[in-house]
Length: 77
Image (cartoon, rainbow, N blue to C red; front, side):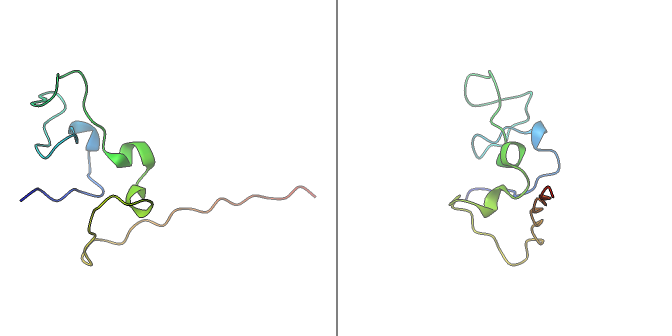
């Protein structure tokens, strides 16, 4: 059974997210060791899983997702 994919990890920069091993960023076990795979939250923001089809089942006990802030644009008068 694969490990569940965390939606909002505390320190995503410390882990390679490229496979189910979740290796430390300084000890990559798979690949050529050139660079780690970033977590989607690092690239797309904390609400990354709300848009698109990621194939992740979000359970009801998952804490409430942060609501994206709506931009407020003032019209010049």
